[in-house]
Structure formats: structure tokens, C-alpha cells
Image (cartoon, rainbow, N blue to C red):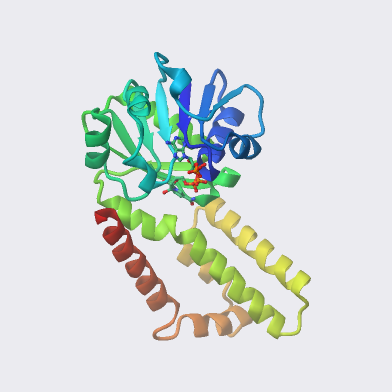
Length: 266
Ligand SMILES: NC(=O)c1ccc[n+]([C@@H]2O[C@H](COP(=O)([O-])OP(=O)(O)OC[C@H]3O[C@@H](n4cnc5c(N)ncnc54)[C@H](OP(=O)(O)O)[C@@H]3O)[C@@H](O)[C@H]2O)c1
């Protein structure tokens, strides 16, 4: 497959890197005004880096991954638009809907995706939406690409992207905040910062790995580690008191969802 990455920043480079690691016979071109930065984020051979699309006139890509900032999309050059609209256009831009892209690109061969930050370590959760008219071959290509950087799921309704953003898009931020507060609490118990930091990072990694690999639900896993009158039960009694974690999670996700809806209308 011949893929163009328009934007070789953090996310574009992470996805390109995953593709190059996991798939064979891939030809990748990265267009980014800051070629030096793009090369430093994707330090691999066999990738063509270009500062703009001017030298690509007449080229044909099977897929173009639009990995620029949402606010940069409306000012895309005609040359870039022509190039992208020759193949399937795959956007990772937050808040830019399929209608807006169809109008700008003059093509309806568009798939809107929403990966999240752990794409940087091959552990993204990516969702995608495509109109029913999009060919199964284009869908398969997108699945193949995003499976290289983690898990992948299709959405049946574009509006669900705002809900996904509130959970998986913002989710890493919630987890980092939780990690920080656990670190502070551990240090308040007298543990030094280095040890407290290791405890928190490894505990989150261990619990996440178990959550991913164990067939039991998160609730069943919680019950499995909570003995009657034990330490976990004492800690959870605080987390799960009225107005505690359950309420906080709902309010945080609702606030993020409302903001995603607002931003998508800007
Ligand atoms: N970061 C996340 O966690 C995350 C998660 C999901 C989705 N996304 C989406 O992913 C997209 C990229 O985010 P990012 O964090 O990777 O941003 P980023 O690091 O700023 O990368 C975007 C790159 O695109 C370049 N660019 C701008 N205009 C261009 C053009 N016309 N042609 C080619 N390249 C161009 C930018 O160059 P300049 O800096 O010189 O403008 C920049 O290097 C955003 O739309 C964001 O909404 C991000």
C-alpha cells in the first residue's frame, strides 16, 4: 500500500511508525513543513519526507492520512486537496466531521477516525466512522493501518465520536491525573518520590495488563482483589462513598462529552 501522511507530527509519526513495524510492502511519504522534526519523530529509512506536496503532482496514493491540526484543515492547498481526493482520505483530526471534509475535498471517499495518545506506544484505542457508501476494501485498509497501533472499532453513527472522545480520547489524561494523585498520596505516607513513582506506574501497568488479558469484567476483578475487612476494601470504601468515584467519573465524562460537542460545532 502507498500511504501519504499529511502531517508528520506526534500522531502522524506514531501511526506511520506502527505501520512500518507491523506491515510489509508499505510505501510511506510524509509531508510536513518541519521535515527535520518529522524525521526526528520517525527516525526510519525508506520513508520519503517532503516539506510540501508540490513535487507530488501526478502521484497516486492508496490512502492519505490527514494528521494535521483541525484548524489547519480549511487552509489546505488545492494541490494537497487534489492529491488526497484521488484515494481514500482518512482523517484523525478531532472535531472535523465528514460533511466538512466532503465539502473541502470534493470527494466522499472519506473515513473519519479518532485514535488516542497511546498510539505513541502501539496501544491506541482507535474508532472510525464511514458512510455506508465506503467500499469494504477501503474499510479493510483503514483497519489494517490502525490495528498496527493498538485496538480498533467501527462506529455506526458519527455522533458517537463525541462520546468516544470523552472516554478514550480524554481517558489517558484522567489516568495520568489519577497516577499523579496516587503519587502524592504515597509520598504523604512517607515513601520517597522515586519509589512512590515506580509503585504507581508499575501498579497501573500491571492492573491494565490484567484488565486487558483477563476475561473477567472490571467489576469481577475488583471483587477478586477485595477481601472482606481487608485493606483494599478500606480504600475502596472511600473511593466508592456517595459522591465519590462513580459520581466523579460520570460528571467528568459528561463534561468532556459536552465540550467535544461544543468544539465540533466551532
Ligand atoms: N495528540 C493526540 O492525542 C491526538 C489524539 C487523537 C487525534 N489527534 C489529532 O491528530 C492531529 C495531529 O495531532 P498531533 O498531536 O500529531 O499534532 P502535531 O504534532 O502538531 O502535528 C501536526 C503536524 O502537521 C503539520 N502541518 C500543518 N499543516 C500542514 C500541511 N498543510 N501539510 C502537511 N503538514 C502540515 C504541522 O506543522 P506545523 O507545526 O509547522 O504547523 C505539524 O508538524 C490533530 O488533528 C489532532 O486533533 C491527536
